[in-house]
Length: 108
Length: 114
Image (cartoon, rainbow over all chains, first blue to last red; front, side, top):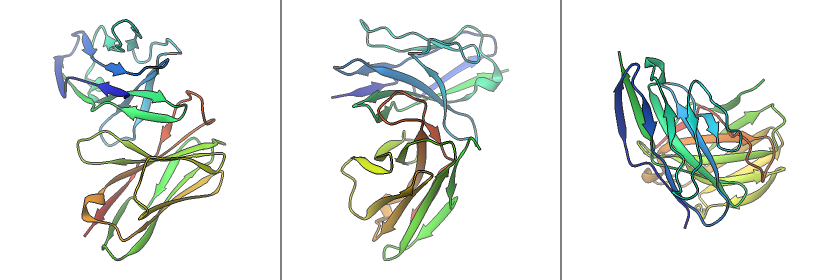
């Protein structure tokens, strides 16, 4: 069965420190993976998708099919990065399944 | 207009009531979604509409009845709900069904069933 795992509920770092939010998936097909972010009092919004290979707000994520991972990374965290981050897998063309989320806290 | 809007923001209803949630988008998107999000949990898919037709029902109880009257509007009709149905109900839309387009989420309706 398809599954998305985010092992850390909370990740706390200081401003300027590197950040890595972990995501592992389980899916027998070819995965379409996304990172969504929810800032305080704002709606859920797309941060990254693996097919576009972009860097958004300094974040990158690489799909590693061998390790079935799609970790989110940023070399230097900023206070405004504090938010809830969800890794998500799209399967059966239109079903999006979310991981349990990681709350990132960036301290000044 | 590049937003998904949802009304009402908050809804309190008794177990015998009938109410409806409304979702609207004017981005020309042809796929629309309902999700349920319990406190401190991720969103869970309930229904998918593709070109105004119901394409996916994730085994949702019949007390939840979706409707897509046109390409811009999505409703969720509620009847005889249970207290455990209290949650944040999110609507989302994407450009085309069946493709890995970005889903745009609304702010949600927070539902409390008493």
